Each structure stands twice: as structure tokens, then as C-alpha cells.
Length: 363
Image 1 (cartoon, rainbow, N blue to C red):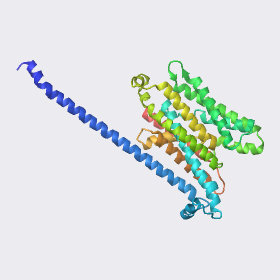
Image 2: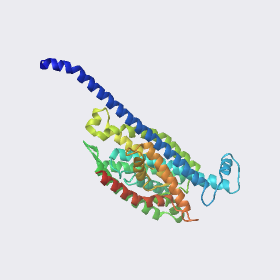
Image 3: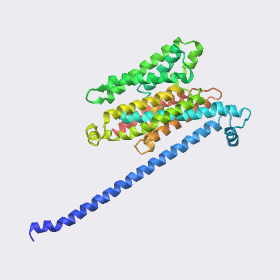
Image 4: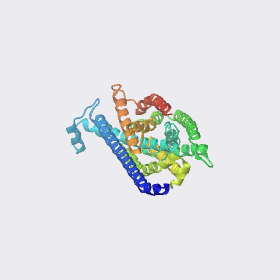
């Protein structure tokens, strides 16, 4: 039989075999994608349950314990001497504000890490939170702002910090350069710390005590007004943040391939940094710069999600961290309440070492 006849005979069988292999490959990919989505959903559900649990511990347990029937009665409007005041004026507001602040910091950290591709990229390391703190303290020292009145000043401070870092890091052709962004952020963080320290030194004693929250962060000033403001900020900022986080996925393949896939990485990254900065500033404006929450949330969520951090999981992780840290801050030393930021800051050094060690292993 001639070679031409052999080729014509083998052709249909070879094509059918290739088609079968492609179908099997598609089935495998679909199965793996389904497993990843299912695992990601389980992680989010588990983190949500963990958040509800730590919030319940924060409200019901501690130096002043409240039973579940009493708590339900208080929520229904009943007045129980002592318990009503403790729950409605201290325990519950702190738990809710801590959860909201953690959501904002966690989502902000996920956006910064997706944009810069660096495990140390977070708003507290890069000076955004320090800029918000400097703006808030400047509003208190120079214009006499108090309470939620410092929120616009904090947002302005974070915007100025981001503008400085972007100006120092953006290239004409390459857009945002990660290494320069990190170095510029560290410099802005140092500048923000110096501004806060100098302004607090000029305040009277009572004002200095109130402004001290902007050096470490605390939930002691939790109130319905602050909770409502931060909740509105999250409703406005989280949906575009989640969309931008997903839209930046093609950029991980490289700028040329991302453009080929129809993505616009440079404006999308700039928008993601803007939303991430606003999330961090909103949380800082009501709770102070809770150190390392944004830094910790994404790698912990990535570890739970088998290496693929999702912004929802990172946000919930941040909420769990803040509420759990507030439990430690309020109960660890008996009758002495520590600022919540002291506890989150104490986690920072070992967490950074852990992140660096994991990065070295991956490299």
C-alpha cells in the first residue's frame, strides 16, 4: 500500500484521537476549576463563621459576661441594669467597628498585593495609613476637628500620600514600578510618623490623649456614628474593589499578554490603588492605623485558599484578626485596656519574617 493511501487511512483516526484528548483535557480543567471554586467558597464560609464566633466571644464573654438570653433581650429594647450599658455602649460597638475596619484593611491589602505583586505590599507599609493618620491629626491640631469630623482630613492625608508615592514610582512607559513604589511608600510612612509626632507635641494634654489613637489605633472610640460612616464607605468601595481585583488577573500574565486579552493594566492598576487607599483611609479615619492587619490578611487568606488569595477571603481574614486582637487587648491584662493596634503591631514582626521565609521558599 502506498504512503499516500496510508496517510489518508490514518487521517480520520488521528483526528478523532486528538478530539478525544482535547475533550478529556477540557473535562480535567473544568473539574479542577470546579474544585477550586468549591474550596474558595468553603474558605469564605469558614471565615464568616469564624468572624461571627469571635464577635460573639467579644460581646458575651470577658470581664463582664452576658448571657445569650440577656443579649437578645437587650437587642429587643429591654433595659438590664449594668448589662445594657456595657453591651450597647462598649462591647457591641467595638465588635462591629472592629469587623468593619478589618474588612476594609483586608480588602485594601488584597488590592495592593494584586497591583504590586509583592507580599510586603500593604497600605500600612507603603505609607497610606500613615498619611491618613497625619491628615487626621493635622485636622485636630490645626482646625479643631473631632469625632467623625476628622474623616475628610484623613482621606485627604491618604490621597496626598498616594500622590507622592505614585509621582516617585511611575515611569513614563512602564507605569507603576513596584520596587520604586515600595521604597517611596517606606519614605512616606516615615514622613507621616514624623508629622504625627510633631503635631501631637503641639496639642494640649487632653487633645494629645485623644490624638494618640492615631499613633497605634484603637476601637475605644467606637460609636454608632463611626460604624454608620464606615459601613457606608464599605458599601460604596467594596464592589468596585472586588471588580478591580478580578480585572487585574490578566495583568499577572505580563503587560503584553494582558493587553492582547483586552485588559488595560495601567489604568486598572491605578484605579485599584485608589480604591485600596480609600478603604485603608476610611478604616484609619475611625479606628486609627491598626498596624499589619492589611499585611497579614492576604497571605493568611492565600494559605487557606491554597495559594490563590481572593479579596473576599482577605477582607474576612482582616475582620477576624481585628476582632480577635481587640479581645486580647481588652482582656489580657485584667482591668487594663490596651489599644488594639498594640496587639496587631505585636503580630507584625513575626508575620513579616514568616512572609519573607515563605517568599524565599517559593523563589
